[in-house]
Image (cartoon, rainbow, N blue to C red):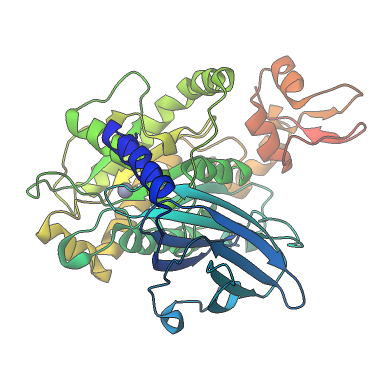
Length: 455
Ligand SMILES: [Zn+2]
């Protein structure tokens, strides 16, 4: 949330810059590369007019900043390795504008916005997102192939979306010895993914695999596109009190937070888009949000059950912060149809815990307990049609009976059909139909034969 004082500050600075035609120096530059885009971030001494355009042969991005602005960082020290940018030079236009020229590997569409200062970034930031014009697809959903793929069975894997919190421009909490939350949680997320990858019947999906920021809403959208059965967001936050310690598990609550701390943590997490460099211009469609909330009450029970199962395991390696699964309005947990959890692996603001969290052995332990907690839950409550459900029923011995079971019902798509109508008619969920048939984006064709889950 933007506080009144920040708003006042922006107005004041805009006024000053208009009145004195003040100059906005560039105090810092950062380049973040994600699979979907390249984000350039400039720390400005104040908000300022800028002009952006692209050139071809070779591909370049040009940013002109008005006035006699200075470029303070060392051009040679800007980290460009493995990004779309191959070079950066600065120059001065005849009208004294500062010109920044970025050499690029490909043609791009640039989108820019200026973000107000916040607790992490005291500067105004100019954020420029570059999306490649001829990228094959913005980002195809990729799940990692698992051992289960090689096991001959027709049963689907349980897909677990693992979301390493923060990333890129958003470091998350910064703890003892500058330990960054975004680094620690990505390591734990990757370790958890590796465990699931090696486990028959499971397929992990990482929302981010490197050091870049993804908007909160985008994280759950990715999980949906991957047909995830579960969404787990991994964090290691800070609290006002450095004595606070222990791990905790949270689920979404729209009705209010279960404790003062839960509310505080959710508020901090929900600021991530602001820190991460996302311009929050658009308003949420109210009707869409209401529908989202309604469909989420159905997954609430599952969220709580997986949460409890994981919390029980984490109790073995760390003192729990709270014995119960907490609740608060975390934006990142608003995933319709998907049980969603946020795990605080510890408080990075606590020196002892920050030290532990930074070690590979503790990260391994944490990943392992989360893994046991979630596989334990899925063994008790395996999703319909999954390899785990099949195995629980006795594997090969159960094949003969499962073939004649209700799950082999089929339906041929007729003109005018929609997935939601079919789902309603057969009293099954759209998500289950999509999962069972590998349908993405709700696209179906007349004459297509689809399998229906048992109602
Ligand atoms: Zn966090």
